[in-house]
Image 1 (spheres, rainbow, N blue to C red):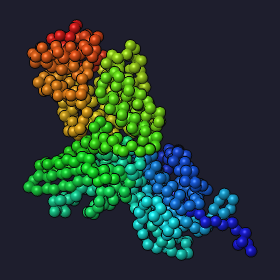
Image 2 (tube, one colour):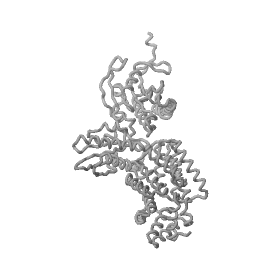
Image 3 (cartoon, rainbow, N blue to C red):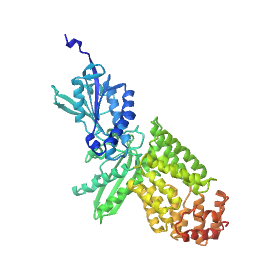
Image 4 (spheres, one colour):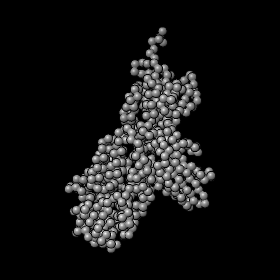
Amino acid sequence: MAESLINRRLAAILAADVVGYSRLMHRDEAGTLALLKTRRRDVLEPLVARHKGRIFKIAGDGVLVEFASAVNAALCAIELQREMAVANGGAGEDRRIVLRIGINLGDVIVEGADLYGDGINVAARLEELADAGGIVVSGATYDQIKNKIGKNFEDLGSRTLKNIAESVRLYRLVGSSAPAAAGATTDKPAIAVLPFANMSGSAAQDCFCDGLTYGIITGLSRFRDIFVIASNSSCAYKGKHIKVQDASRELGAGYILEGSVQQASGRVRITAQLVDGATGRHLWAERYDRAIEDIFSVQDEVTEIIVGTIATSHGGRLRKAWQNRAAAPGTKDVQALDCFLRGMEALNRYTREDNQQARALFEKAAAIDSHFAKPLAKLSWTYLIEASFGWVRNPEESWTKAFDFAKRAIACDDDEAYGHYSLAGYHMCRRQLDHAISEFEIALALNPNDADILDDLALCFSFSGQPEKGLELARKAMRLNPHHPEYYVMQLGQILFDCRKYDEAVTALESLRNFDTTLMRVYLAAGLAALGRIPEARSSIDRLLELDPDATVARWASYDMLPYRNPEDLEHCRQHLAKAGLPE
């Protein structure tokens, strides 16, 4: 009789907890608790509401959610893992919230707002068996969701679970053991690096292949607006022959980087190719042939080049492919990244109109996503450029805004290199060169493979009286990013002029096809004058005066425009501009 009074219903129960929660709390109790609450508010609760679920219990790091539909529970779990991974971005281990999730469909006892019974206990036991970032479901759940959510599951067989009378059949979502699969719908380009294949026929080369693979994953992971599938997931494909499209689907990566290593007669050949995960189309491919006197140096060099080529903001092949993908509805974060990348294209044309367009796009990106630090950092650069190029009546106001936006970017995300990069640019333009170099070095410590940062550090060394060191870094930046924008070449020409390598400087500057700015004309005219090619120098001055009718030697050969540390370097430029015919 008492049994008939018990209120029961069938429910899909999602159980989740945080991997390594005790370790996180030990390192930073207050910070971990605050981060967990933020993730519940910003990620968990909206997803549960969207999939018509109900959170009925929160205990420490654990949460229990009820759904009327097993399909809704599974879809919510998949999105939850993906969104948690996106929120983690490139954060360090002590700032990552990674979940394990179990789902069970079963009978539950209802007491007010709470639920009890084996239906819940099974879900909790399944969660304990899931990998970090993974999802495990019961056989009852699988029977309801198979062929309905477009995902593959691996049958783990029947298991006896603690304090559960009957064994339970388990299924694991394939590709869910990463700190989450992000897929083609992610709000940033998602890439998986498959293990480089050993084509040498020698097991001894496995170490080199593994080192190359892990090095590339680590390097790519430093770019905060790229989602990189964790190595424990992508490297599970080592030694397996699998279609790129299958790996893309299972890992949730829109792009796949794969390659091979072959060694013979004291040389090594490394191939790499970036592939569209949906179509299998090759987006980029390169071959690197190297002597192997020092195999680890070869490994480091090729790793740097591949990472720079794939990921650098300006000209990176992954970003180009992602930006040119078929238009599709996306999240606000997708819109923010699109605005940022379009802003970068405008900014790097270095005209007054493009600078204004870039600023509007960066402002829009920052408004869409208040946690996205890069637009704030690049807003700083728009004010730096207009102040240093003399495009505003009140440059001090622009300098102040440049400094403020750089500091805001650092405050928004201190682990993002671009905030320190913009502060370095501010100090460089203000002729505070030691401070600038220090901030550039912080930025490079956060992301040593970012060729853009390296290229501007090269210019800073040239301004500081070390042009040969700057030249070395500029050439390295161009090696790291072979598809670099033209401003790399402009700055190379400027540094070559500072090195008194006038022939090379003029050759570099004359090679520019779509980059015709005031600064380019200043250095081209000065370089031509230094070579005694006066008619050509005066032609360049004529173009300079078209771009800047107020141009004079006093205006351009000044510390405001060219922040050289040593007066003799500024005088070197001044003399050759006068020789080229620029009015005093």
